[in-house]
Length: 516
Length: 63
Ligand SMILES: Cc1cc2nc3c(=O)[nH]c(=O)nc-3n(C[C@H](O)[C@H](O)[C@H](O)COP(=O)(O)OP(=O)(O)OC[C@H]3O[C@@H](n4cnc5c(N)ncnc54)[C@H](O)[C@@H]3O)c2cc1C
Image (cartoon, rainbow over all chains, first blue to last red; front, side, top):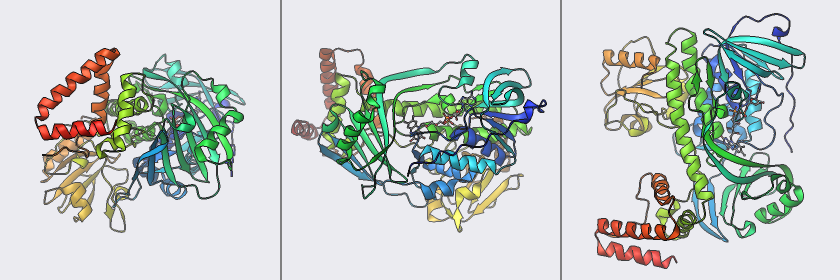
């Protein structure tokens, strides 16, 4: 069944009749990032107005692969269960070169986590769930068919001009968050430009609906016989929809390649039959670029407006959600007077760091899939050749590296006897906890997590737990006991074996001030 | 010591990127020459005849 794009309701905004009072936050864009941002801010008690020039979810095939961290964030936003129930997971991945399978792998789920490594779920479902959730929340004022046409910043406010079907109006807010996507009009209005690499390559993506038992696996072809010299990818999504990505080469005409009479025979060669319905086709090129700075006074960029990557490795939407995770509590703390405005500099520092890691990974995958002629191609082909024979080379085959959260640089208190994976700057790892899960219990407030010990009273919520094998592996290491300070975005701020109230207090101050 | 054939290089993606970057801007003959020097340098570092013989054999078998 094709997805039913039900339009969202438009209501004339109050600002058309009378000047609205200054809002706390205006979010431009109701894509996955803007919607998640509004819900996350409401979790921290902050109201926002979300403006979108459109009134439907993202049309066609875009993001499909949502990482474990995104699912954990969805859980805090209230749509984790839905995403998990609807999403599908593949376990077996097969890699082909020319006409033979080079190797395959089985992704065994890691035990003791609520969420799997990823699920595949069409972006339109994610946006639908987020819109439905946002509409339940009083602190979120969602306005469709509200197009932002001008933005101006003064010392104490951001002023916007907005076009609606009923005319134009103005809004003012303490902060504006630009979640208006890769072509970000706000970025343009501010005269800011992306910096980075553009790849001269065309990819065709097609969604097809196929009944029957086609394997729930990921298939990746380097230079398949059916598509000479290029690469191809097949992925499963819910509703019996499969996504096919075909590299086209730079010297192709996108409009020509999109025609069904061109697309259908290609897909027949991929799946080996013609029993499918074409649901969506588009051709895209891609870039790996970002803004130099994500924070410009009272205007803050998040998601694709701040950084764009090639889709291989599924880092676009996933990294946008990590921006939301990082920014939500910080902006709330600044607006509520709990932290100095300087805390927002740490959003810029940490998320540009995250963006660089994503850009690096996406560029490397792109290079591997589309090597330049000459030595680059020789190395690529020989990695594939070796991979069929020598185990080490399989890991070198790069058709996308799964998105995992980056580790923020940190000089906070640490102890090398504790596991590296949960060092300061890393996202806390999930583990079973009572009848539920550790991350759910950490929630979205700053916490002191005390394992095998009592926590001093420092005015923060405390979670005291006894060790389990998972906690030993993930949090204790060699230590008999452990004491973690965890930020509202569930990033480890500092940790100790012996808690010393004064040191913990200093680390709490550093957290609110955004010091690394 | 025998030749290690399983994953042994942490962050090999990073090495691979550096390897390609080292070649950037060279013509074919220069790249060949660079590869030759690289093999000689690594062979000296490995310093184990049996390992090197097995590596040569493996590279040759895959032709
Ligand atoms: C082929 C493809 C495959 C992808 N695969 C993946 C994947 O598997 N996993 C993954 O994580 N990511 C993937 N991505 C990336 C993902 O789609 C994007 O990163 C994600 O949509 C970014 O969300 P966003 O909210 O920042 O921007 P968008 O989704 O682009 O939303 C921006 C919103 O702003 C609105 N807007 C624009 N201008 C204005 C204005 N002037 N006034 C008001 N509103 C405005 C738009 O209408 C839109 O609703 C893929 C992308 C592509 C193209």
